[in-house]
Each structure stands twice: as C-alpha cells, then as structure tokens.
Image (cartoon, rainbow, N blue to C red; front, side, top):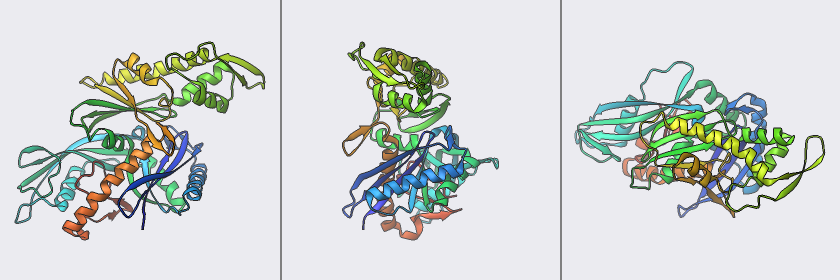
Amino acid sequence: MKEMIVVLDIGTTKISMTYGEINKEGELSISGYEEVTATGLSNGVIVNIDKTVEEVLLVKKKLEKFIGICIDKVYLLLSGNICSIYKNRGMIAISSEEKEITPNDIKRVIDVTTAIPTSKHNTIIGVDPYEYVVDGIRNVSDPIGMIGHRLELKANIIISKTSIITNLEKVVEKIGLKVLGRVLQPISISNIILRREKVNYVTSIVDVGGESTGVSIFEGSNLVDMYTIPLGGKNITKDIGYFFKLSFNTAEAIKKSLIDFSIGYDEEEEVLIENSFHEKVTIKKSLLNDVAYDRVEEILNMIKDSFKRYDKSINRVVLVGGGLGEFPGIEEIIKYNLKIPCMVYKERLFDEEKSLLAPSIAAIKDEYNNYFPLKELNQKHGDKEVEQQEVSGKVGIVTKLRAFIDEFL
C-alpha cells in the first residue's frame, strides 16, 4: 500500500496543498499540487476563519479530484514570519546500566531542553537540535548507540503566538483533516539544500511572501537567527496598479507574466492592456520593469540592513517563494545589490520548475527523509520506544536524524 505525505501551506496570498507518495519500493514521487487564492489572511495570520475554511476545503477537493485519493491527514507548513527562536541547552545523565544512549534518552534531553518559561500567549511548536555533546565530546550529530555518562543538547526552540497556531489548526480540523506535524519552512529547505554540503557556509534563506519577507540565517545547516521585513510581492503589485491605473488582479497578472530583469530583453517592446477605466493603453515593458525594480531594490536594501544585525559575513543568499523568485534575471539583480552570490531554489513538478513550488516540495522531501530512519529505529528498538507519539493532540516524530522535531511535549 502506498503511503502519502501531504503538505498544506496556508499563506497570505495563496493556500496550496502538495501531494507526495511513497511506493512499496520506498521511492518518493511528487504527483500533485493545487492552489487557490487566499482572502482570509493578513501577514500570514488568519483574520477570517470561515473564509479560510472554505478556501482550504476547496484546495483539498481540487487535489483529491486530481490524484483520485481521499486526503485525511496533512503536515502544516509554517513560515518563519510567524515564528521566533529561543536558544537553549539541556543535559541528562544516561541511566541505563550499559550507558548506551537510546532514542528514549534523546526524548529525555529534548524534554529538559524545551522546559523554558513561556507566557500563555506563546507556544512551543518545535525544537531544532543543532549540537549533541557526549561526555564533553562536541559536534556529535547522531548520539544513539554511543556509550557515555552525560548527554547534552544545544537547540533552537521554535516559538509562535498561541492564537496564530490555534487558528491555523482550527481551520484544518474544521474540514476533518488531522495535523500530523508542523514543518518550519526555512528548516525544511535547509535540510534539503544545506545538510548535504560539507563546507560551513553562512547562508541566508530569503522567502519573499505576499506581505512580508522572511530572512533566516544558517551557519552550515544550523539555524542561528530569523528576521521579518514588512514588504513583499503584494507591494510590487500595488505599485504597478497605482502607476498604470490597473486593478489589483490585472496588475498581479502583468507582474507574473511580463516582469523581466534578464539582460538583453527588448526595451522597446510594448504591451496592450486594459486599465481600471476600461481603456486600452500601451505601456513599454522597460517602464514596467523600472516600476517593479524600485520596490525590489527597497526590499533588497532592507534585507541588506537585516544582515548588519548578524556579526558574520553572509556567504550566499538562497531565494525561495513566488514573491521575487519567478522574475527572470532576479539572481543577477540580487548579486548586484547585495554583493553576495545568489541562487533561486526551484523544484520541478511535471514539466514546470518554479520557486513557488520549492517550500512545499522541500517539506515533503524532508518528511520523506525522516520516514526511513523512523522505520529503522522501530525495527532496532521496538515500536513502543520510538513510535509516533500523540501528546496534547499533536503528533511528533522522534527520529535520530530529524532536524526539526515537532512538538511532542
């Protein structure tokens, strides 16, 4: 029987659902994606629950119709814009007679590390372990099976406002879906594109969303800081609409289809559009690019300013999301403005390769990479010790290789 991994992304401008399946040979394939326009959110926060329920239900039905399978459980993708990190460390004594570290010891040290004071307005949504220490031996990536007397953990505790998470999960539960786990977008992306590297680069993953931009800083593959910039792709759309007197939907369509920052485009090319007064007007593509570029430059300057809060040089930028990632030539624009090498992270689905698809597909791949270690641990230690654990209505997966362990406290 095939197993499914479905990621639900409830964003400011769109709600999407992405489907991956694992066949009996253990191979993953991404075979479905649907999206609808989101109208019930502002800055990633739900402001109209009923509208958001309707839109999540619609995207669910569209995906089910496409794949021919009923969806009853999802992973909830969370942007860095609604989260913050709290660095902490914890330590336990290894209690077994053999002094061999087991998955249960990992759970114990995570419990200790996440025992931090939080107000009723904030909730811990996950933990990102970045270093284990066994009897003073540092930089241990996989302590299970090692012999030791003392196990320490350094980790990022992922925190969000309780109301934000509660409302997101309330929407999901209202349409009968079970939340298997929460996936923090920058961490799942880093797990796919950074963890396979041996060089300890300082990388910034930049996600330009609809109304805000998330900036995450990684040393190697370890998350060290997150910032939010209050500008996004919608600001570019509004500028185009204001300058050319277009409706928002028309400006958005033009932005997606005509903005081109690549070298060598035809500056004299003209396009015929209909403005808000139902008048046919001709505009030069170069003027359209100039209007968009002014806002893009402002966003990049704010990103550059956020880098100044970090005390090390950023070696490269990885751009994700549809806010800027789909513009031809955007990599060169970022390199020119930030003076830092840049890559646009894209994922392929069928015959399309888009930055817009990258966060959800990266989340599916990350969950898939956790799937086999979990099975291996279950076979080695028994299902009772490392099974998926249900605590406080949330399911968390305890695996020895997991980079982002969902809440199971």
